[in-house]
Amino acid sequence: MGITVTTEPQPEHSGHNDHPDNTGRPSADPAPRHLGFSRRRLIASAAVAGGTGAIGAFAGFGAGRSGAADRAEAMPSRDLRGANGPVTEPFYAPHQSGVETTPQAHAHFLALTLKPGSKAGDVMRWLRLLTADAAALTQGSGPLADSEPELAHDPARLTITFGFGRGLVKLAGEESVPKWLGPLEKFPIDDLDPDRCTGDLLLQICGDDPLTLAHARRMLWKDSRNFAEVAWQRDGFRRSYGSQGEAKTQRNLFGQLDGTANPGPGSEDFARIVWGQGTGRADAVHSARGAPPDDLGAHLPDWMRGGTTLVLRDIAMNLDTWDKADRPAREFATGRTLGSGAPLSGVDEFDVPDFDAVDKRGLTKISAAAHVARARDGLNPEMQIHRRTFNYETGAGEGAGLLFASFQADIARQFLPIQRRLAEVDLLNEWTTPIGSTVWAIPPGVKEGEYIGQSLFEG
Image 1: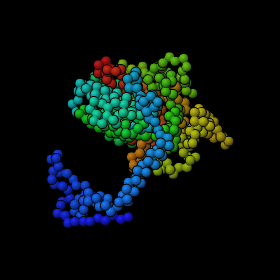
Image 2: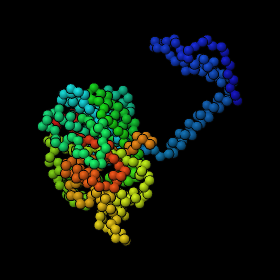
Image 3: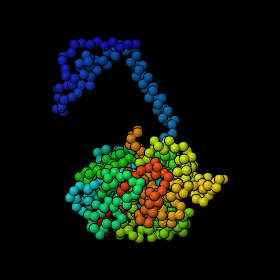
Image 4: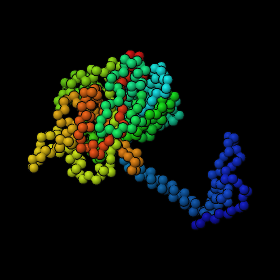
């Protein structure tokens, strides 16, 4: 059944209502009168002419809604709340969350530069504010100044990790600044963008829900805009929550399993490699490279006890040229199979690579120039790191890459020997280019009533 619309001459009109409403502001007419009819008249005409047709239309709409609801009830849903309420990661703890925490699906790295003339007192006030709001957000509560606290109620394993740059630490006194806290040495593979190599404070914001993460970022920026400017920022991602088991190794955009050799969270290895001191556990777990020393954190200043260091590298990945390489060439370059992640000398992802194994032709199965060989073969037990990586994509055809977050207690003894070898020779360098590089001091966690960095400014 059709709808008859009767039009009547209308006075000239500019397309919006120039008469103010009861707020004193001009109010927009949702159906401009220059179209020859008003929305109200159209609806009235439809009701008269449509009769049962209009009722049928609304009845169909209701039926559709009901059917969708039935389907939704039948579909499995992802539960970010857990059995006993919202899924949270601890904020108040000896170590900051977001380091040993199982990596979440989404990340945002926000580097901030202090405004000129900033003093130690300004930074202390800023850090107090950030600490209070980060503590609230990670536990599912909106900060005091949050006008949309409902967006914080499902934290979905939100973590907020603070990193201090040289400029911020310097405000506490020159003697507090470690020698290693500054730019890394220049590597021949680097093509660094200076704008991605700066910052006084890093906020690593991670979570399994992008809406929660976006809200947390906005709240923390509201806390920061009177104290700092944005130096750079980058979004990262891994597999979506629930798409695979959390314990499984994630893949990067090359399709490689990324992080196979990481020390296990909660292990003696992790404590030594990342936090720099052993736990005295009787059931210590050590890698095939042997037991890492338990003094890797001995060089850290007192204000960093319980903390660690972060080297954050922004690595551009050339997916166009990677696509031109066949699968054997890709696996030869990495030294691992793409499917299982197993070393070319083994069958399982976690098999220890055998760099002396040869094939039927008498050729080594893993090239000495392959990535896994350069990153592992012949290195001492202390030359290990914890990599917490996130992929990024800036748009179709514009660029993609990897945010390579390397946590270790001692950059000089752990990170640099590995990086020097990779920069010298690594078949993967054909497709990767570091474009950003920063170094951060990760202070220890805090107790309730303290603020992040208190051990630096008041220790």
